[in-house]
Image (cartoon, rainbow over all chains, first blue to last red; front, side, top):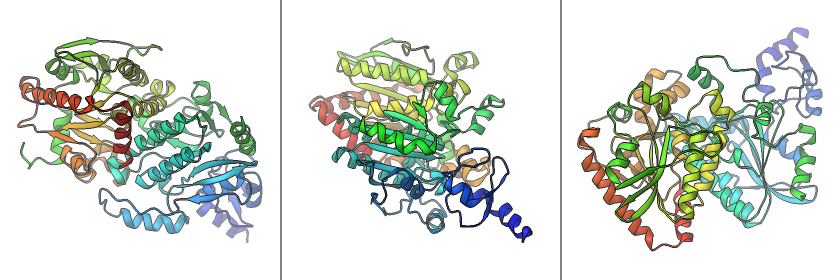
Length: 276
Length: 263
């Protein structure tokens, strides 16, 4: 029924188009251009709106399947114990709920895989899991990923996606910025390559640590990449922000990223870099 | 100091207008201080001061986040909120310390890194990240002391150290209590509640093993009563340098790595 199509669209569009859990055969509405889209068209177009070209956020497993040789991914550190250093009221329950809803253990999946025949260490963050926020477990997984890459002498790729540090873990979240950055210093000391791929959004404590430390920093078109959130900046300066502020294109212009790469070209670009 | 002080009380003290600043401590602790300026790229950021100092015949590189005492001073100091140029100046001076084998002492006191348009344009995130990365590998001992507010990443960018100490009424946090309450409870007026939950006081952080030492404050510090604490800090710095004198460069880096690796 026509009525049912639009009913589904209005209630679920925003969530669905920000993650890869798009069921078959449904129509979706793009939150950017409001066009009603056939789900399969979105999926086959790398989760990019066929109408306006907006990039939807995708899950770590979708990302890994796009970038790695088929069946080559081996996951590391699948389930680390929950951390709740502040005994924050309701946090443990929230974590349990989010794990069930997202079918993810935490806001990052890490491991190793192969890209066109070359072994890599790889991590992909997820904005579905508490906005990709970094707490102790995310910091630990990323640190072990980097240390594993150093030990095995692997190039490293991290897909960054985060609203920043995980508030519920307080100062411990802040320390993850130092913990991950120092691991990268060691990886760097071994002469190994680290490619950071910044996806929408990459902000806060993640942006101000491992995201901006790549030997090569790539970004997806239109990705929001910034240290302070746009609203905080607006409140600080008391004015509206310029058009395109903190988008990937802005960062390219200001000299902070190496290249903006279309999703369809990402595997090829990474392949060239890791073989260089 | 009374243990009846709440976390929120301590936040107010840490932010207080009378709270001594980095330059106050530098003047009270070191025999000599020559300030050095500039990031060698585009600007000298007044929110961070740094240079060469000495206690007797031991040379140091000293860096501090500097708040202003009045409106005029704060125009120069930007209320202690560094821009990327400040972090780059700090890094330049820290690398210089490594070249000349001088221990580094950092005084941390900032509400946070400045979040304006130009700060983003000039790479605030990158500047902080770069400091975390480079500090972790410096082959000289680094000591940071939080003298006022340790505001998030903006503070951590001077805090990847072998040891981090705090004054009893200083705070060190992921975000301000107002910001925390706003994000998690949609109500910034619950900041005093947030301050308790966040565990931002010096004692909380020592219990969590985030810092090594707390200097007691028998009353809230001001320029007039700074001498006793300054003397304690001076003694502490001398003991710190003595401890690290016998360690190899590799040991100094390895211990710092282990410290943060355990967090």
